[in-house]
Length: 193
Image (cartoon, rainbow, N blue to C red; front, side):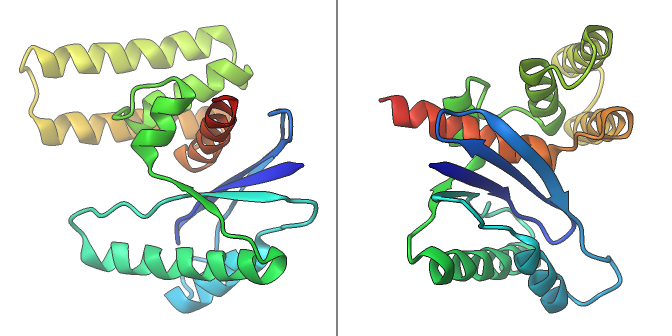
């Protein structure tokens, strides 16, 4: 048995493939041309998902944020991916919301993108120890600034996103791939119980 984990997004969808014993064997991202319309992006992404040899699909559930248009588009993409999986295997996928998956994987459910990236980089040794230490220090320093009320929430979130972008630029591991890996870790953990 193997399973495929999907962190779906119209900008860049992350995926991770695991063996039945929980070994991460492949990971990647699907990034449609930003200039094409949203329906074509959905079609492109779903057609790039490879269900070959897959027994289970785990999908990050839709987050209901403040931007209704984003939620609507993400729901459409999720629906298309669900349809493709059910049509392929006639099985219902497994869903985790991000905070539950993170908690099951062993990281704070409310972690920021950069924290998730550092967790995955360290767990799988996708980056050198000095780089991981550098990213963790940037995160810790920023959290300390925020805790000491030296910066406001908006500035904190902006700077945390900049750390996430730096990690992507230097390692190639964005939050999309890392979130897909977290889904796999969550699924493994839940299967143990």
